[in-house]
Length: 297
Figure 1 (tube, one colour):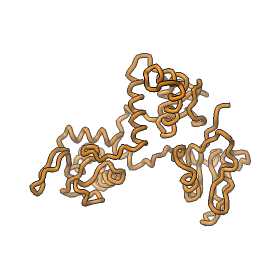
Figure 2: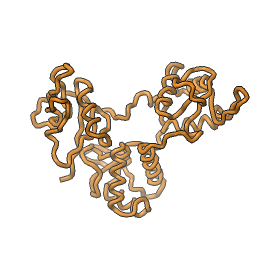
Figure 3: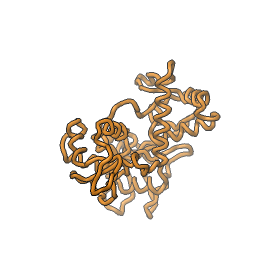
Figure 4: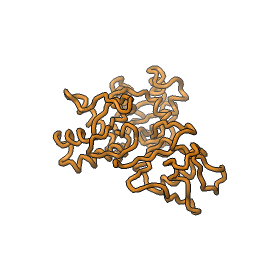
């Protein structure tokens, strides 16, 4: 991730170092005001306000913290902060472990000759960093990344559910087949830190009224739980949210067996529970965009 690379750059630039304050030494820390200067000087932020917002986001996500945890906000002042990865307090969550596993697999794949990752074309569209599901399964087993094909499929599904790989047209989950997938994340692209301010663990989706996944709430009243397909098509797969229980639960009456709600307004939801997805739909904007994946027939 971008903040990990920036952390290494800060170490190299000696902004992160042992500092002494009130007769006490604080290892591997930085001065907030100096870091804000660094962000602007290295064009990671256009101004101080953006730099402060960026660092506050890192604090909100438990990436940095005040050395004594006396400040919950990032203050552009002569206060000492530290990356949690430098003091062992960084929470290595399941999501982070999956991300790191995906990055490791990607780096291993692109560093070998005759890699299975190639530019391929499907339905007249070219896709980068693609592979066939069965090819990935073969490779994972051969390289010892999985003990057998079943375990390899499970790993592929976890990577897809966390947005690291995807079916090229987002229609299918991960299968041991000749279906085409791609790495959604290009781990070797250097990202600017300001990109973190514009992301919400989601990808951009078209909200065009012509989209078969676009729903529009009939009216903005809080008690209303009815939806209408904005495309006007009664056969649209967006019907999955057309009806709701009066209590506000979402039964997904039109979902068929082996169909999965993939995203809600661009946010990945495969790894979320039923109640959370229902809340996203019922409390979201008036126009609702959903993607549904289906199993291979």
